Amino acid sequence: MSERLAGRTALVTGSSRGVGAAIAFRLAREGARVAVHYQRDAEAATAVVSQIIGAGGAAAEFQAAMDDFDKLDEMCDAVLNTFGPIDLVVNNAGSASRGDTVANSSIAEFDQLMRIHSLGPLHMIRRLLPGIRQATRGDIIAISSTTVANAPANSAPYTMAKAAMEVAMRTLAREERGNAIRANIVAPGLVDTEMGSRLVRAVNAGRKLSDLHTGFPFGRVCQPCDVAAVVAFLVSEDGSYVTGQRIVVDGGGPDPALF
Image (cartoon, rainbow, N blue to C red; front, side, top):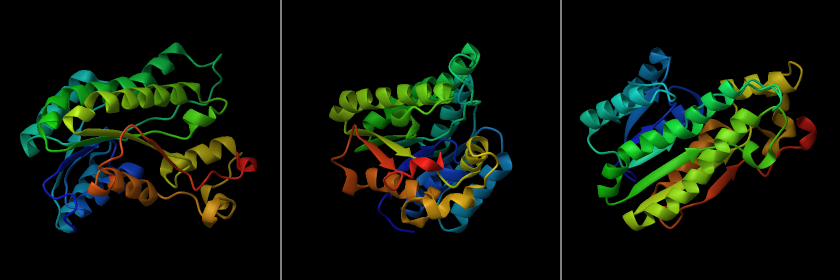
């Protein structure tokens, strides 16, 4: 355990697995206390918390659906009652779209993904913002996606929701820097996670993610720890003069022929 984030308390949404878990582990390793959020898999969240505590850190798990604002309020209350004020929020929780065209995607799907990726996180931030403003320093990180810039076909509900979140974060960065709050976006490309594997199977006729490693930059697909390292930099003193930025984590981009 290091002390770079000692005294800070982080809430990481969607941190029972994948990128979120890697971020939770990294922030805890840097000395932060971590609220591990999950929606469905309590067992996985408990395992993350146990691993953090076993390594000498402090963590607890909290449940809420990102599209249920009442449950988000209850979760925020529980986190504040457990840890006190939060000064570091990482919005990572998300859900992929079904892969239909704009014409064939339902308005209900657009609405649900907007709530999960944009409106739910914004509701949570607004709930926690008074406490973050009281901290010596505050950080809000949104985990987005390179799809916002690439706009791939059959991704509109997901990509639109991520884009809305990015605009809100850039606006928040300007509005809150006078309160010593930094707001930044981390946008990975394909990441070696369960969700990444599902994406590869969907768009590459059943190919496995492991089949793609040699065609990606540096001979491998982005790992969750790569994303976590960028988050750790942004919320550290080394990243104290960085706000309103979108950091892409994709090794410079894969060969377009892969997708």
